[in-house]
Amino acid sequence: MAQTLASRELTNPFYEPAALAPTASARTAQAESLRQRAAIAKLTRSHEQMRRQVKAVEQRAEVRTRRLSRRLASTERHAARVEERSRLHAAYAREARHESARLRDRVQALETDNQIDQVMSIVGALQATAFGDSGSLTTASNLLLLGNQLAWTQFDPLMRSMEIYSGPTPTAFKWLKPFGSLATGHLLLAGRQHVRFVSGTTSLVPVAGATVTESLRSRIAEDLWPSFQRRTDVPVTVVSLDPVTPPLSGLVRDGELRITVPPPPGVALLAAVPPPPPAPPPAIRVAWMIDTGAGRG
Image (cartoon, rainbow, N blue to C red; front, side):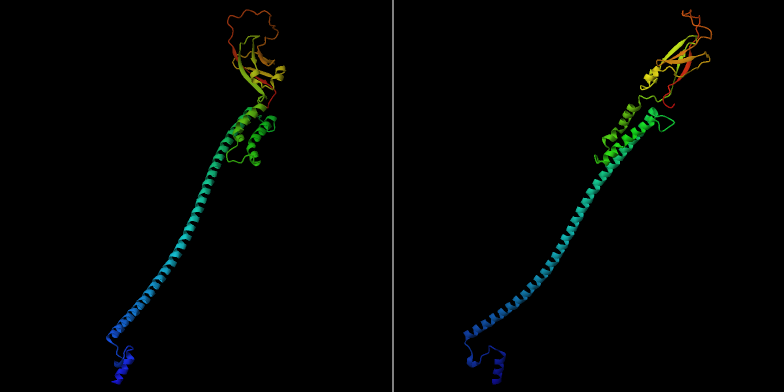
């Protein structure tokens, strides 16, 4: 019995010997205390379990937060790279548009230059035909024409080399080049005689003493006219174009060509005009040519 009590005393810390057995109220209080202790232990375990769960949730949340932060940082870096690429592409696009506009303006300027140069070549050919001398490149007229062409051709490059104008479009001198070349060529060479031999045709009645007069004013250049008008030694060639070929003579006096049918040898023309014959012969065509002595042909 004593052993049993001793074992109970060892296994149950709340066991009290019968001699020390509490009253009913004490037992109730002791039971309530045990229940409270059990509840407290249960709450402690529950709290610990909840604390572990909260910690696990916090850890998972922290991991997810770190992942989200890394993803957000990566997204921001990617967005920054995309924005940088977009700015670069926009800058490249602007530069490409500007370069395209410059090239378009340059192509248009080259086309305009080509058209102006074509007109200039036509003007040069026209001036060479009107004022140039054939047979030699070093005559005064040909050299003047060459200098005139070169002067107007080099105006635009000279202005660009001196940085007076640097735009893509042609300068005003470029546009005025054909007209300026024509004007200066006319001023320099229009008054010169460029054709040495002047010719024409006229009609003449093949009667002894008949004379026809041709004015040469419109066929002689302005600069040559004063000296030509004073000349009396101008060579003249007169040829009949019809089968009737009477003797013909021509001379130049005071700038006029006079073609005459001379009387037969030994016959002098009377001062009084004889009566006309019953049937005067018809007029014949006469070709004439004079040598002005100017130009080269």
